Length: 426
Image 1 (cartoon, one colour):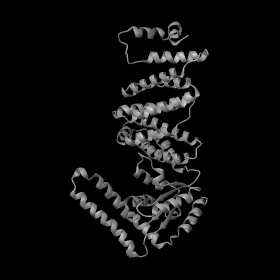
Image 2: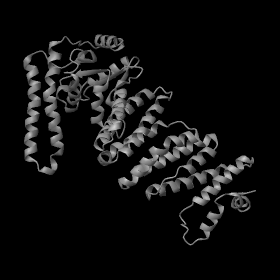
Image 3: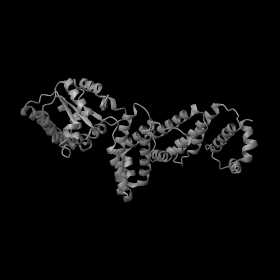
Image 4: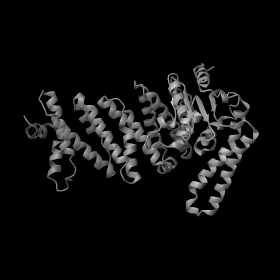
C-alpha cells in the first residue's frame, strides 16, 4: 500500500474528521495556501506505516517537516494562532538521528522570524507563543534543551528593549509567561554536563536578574501585588547563587602592557576560579556596558591599575560600578578587590593630577553639550553622567592605592591572589 491508496481506502473511511475535510475540499472557500489537511494525512500515514511495519523513505518525512515549517512561518508572519501539535508529532515520529536535526531546523526558523524585519507585534506574537509552548513540546518529543536557544531569546529581548518596556507597563500576564520560560531555561541549563556550562550559567543568571526586575516592575505597575513577594524572592535567590568556583573579574586597559598581565593572571588563576574579562566573555551582540556592570556581582575583582587605566573612561567606569558597594561593605570591600598597581601614585601631587584630569573632562564635555544642537547631545549627556560618576568615586580608589602597600611584583601578587581566592568564606 502506498500513500495515495491509504488516503482513499482507509483515511477517508476511518478518520473522524474525514467527512468535514472532504466537504472543505469541495467548497469554493477552501484556502489553497492552507495545507493542513495534507499535513495531517501524511502524519497519519507515517504513523500507520510504523504500526504496520511498512518501510517509508526518510525523504518523505523530510518533505513533510519542511511543509510544517513553511506553514509555521505563515502562521507567525500573518499573526495567526501558531500550532505546535504537528511539529511535535513529526519530530516524535522521526528516527532518533533525525529528531535533533528537526528541532535545530525549527529553532533556526524561529530565529529567522524574530530577526526578520517584521513589526514588533508580529515577532512578539511568535515570541510569546514560543515561550508558552516550548517546554511542553520538548517534553513531547523527549529532547533536551538546546543552550543556544536561550541566547537567541535573550538577544531578542535586549534588541527590542524599548518595545518590551511598553509590554512591561501594560501586560503583566505576558511578562509572567516569559519569566516562567526564562527560569525554566536556566534550570534546564544547570542540568547540562559540560565544562563550558559554568560560564553560560553566569551570563544567563545576570540576564535573569536584569529581566526579573522588569517583571517585578510590571507586577507593581499593573496592580498584580500578590506576585510581588514571590518575584522578589526569585531575585534574591538568583543573587545568592554561586558557581562551583568563585568568579574573578579582571579590569584593565588594552592600550598598554596590562593585557599581557591579564593573560598571565587568567592562565594562573583559571584552575581555581572562573575568570571574567571582555576578551573571553563577550560575543557578537553582547552589550559591553551591561558586561561592565556585572563587576559588582563577582566574588572577586582584580584591577590592573596603570597610568593609562586611570585615564580610560571604560576602565574607570568599571571601577566606579564596583565602588558603588564601598559604603555598604567598607569593612570587607578590599577583601574582594585586589589591586595590581603599575601607575605612578607616590605623592599627593600625582593623585591630584588624576582627579584634575577627570574634572577637566567634565568641563570639556559641558562645553561640547552647550555648543551642540539638541538632536546630537544624547551621547554627550551619557558620557557626562559617566564622567561625573567617575569623578565622584575615583578618590576612594586613589586613597587606597596610595595609602596601602600594594604588591608590585607579579609573581608575589599571583601567590597572594591565589591565597585570597581559595580561602573559604566564613
